[in-house]
Length: 375
Image 1 (cartoon, rainbow, N blue to C red):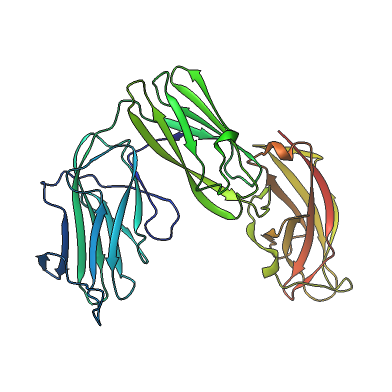
Image 2 (image 1 turned 120 degrees about the vertical axis):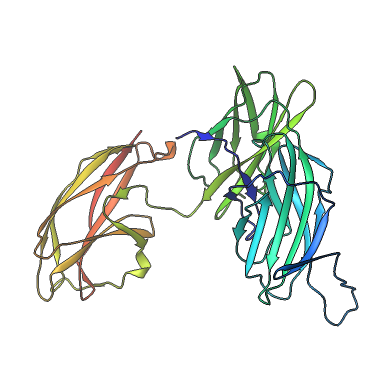
């Protein structure tokens, strides 16, 4: 796994409720009071528009509820908004300083930001919505960033994707000894139980967090683990680390030069008397992570239409690779790689399934060959 350097960044749940890593501009604007403004093209006015509960027609408004101007921020924190717009804004902008980060869609009212890699100092956080009418709503707060000296310099996760029941291992580098660490997995695992979490101090500012996901860590989505570190003076830093849940089986191998797609999207009809055929396949008995093997096959066309695609799948997986066949090509050598390895795959055979497909959608019967995964 490649270590992740912690860079100057902001994590936000702004648009779709999922964490997205975005760059945060960090300009040092002059101090101003907590602001709400409704900006016409080339014109800005101050003050909150009225939006009484009994109004027949609510007026658009936007304000930042938290933090307030003058507050001090450290580590991972949340920007809380309140707003009303009659329709989805045509443009959404947010961030520390100019230029702001752009987004699309209806904004979420909670924005997660990570200040841990920002320089200490004064900042302005701005949210700006542009409506279809051309009207702009803007709110900003002026805050101070003041982080403790112990900061997460880099981290590494033991896997790229996780499924329910698997164990997450996070290797963390702070560069400071004797910190007290805890990680909150609730966003990834609704059944989070801190009793299943183990934190080890490895010395020299290195730490390891181990956590076994429960059966409630379902779905295919991204989530955030918030790691909290406390030093001897009681100063706290928090850092979000993104993890990917992938409970739907995905192809464990990569076919070089192939196109990955759902098998259900391929309209096929097995007609043995007319479909192209695949004759003897040469495939090594095992494959190791980070290596490639060569799948050798020969195509034999029968009846109507020469084969123009080779379909490569695996038993138990719903996606397949499509490899195009050149006109007149009868022999193929297809590289297959296993770039990632899960301990649960060790020693298990992957049952590759290969078929030939012609332009009419007629396919040969699947030819199966097992290949064993090795670490």
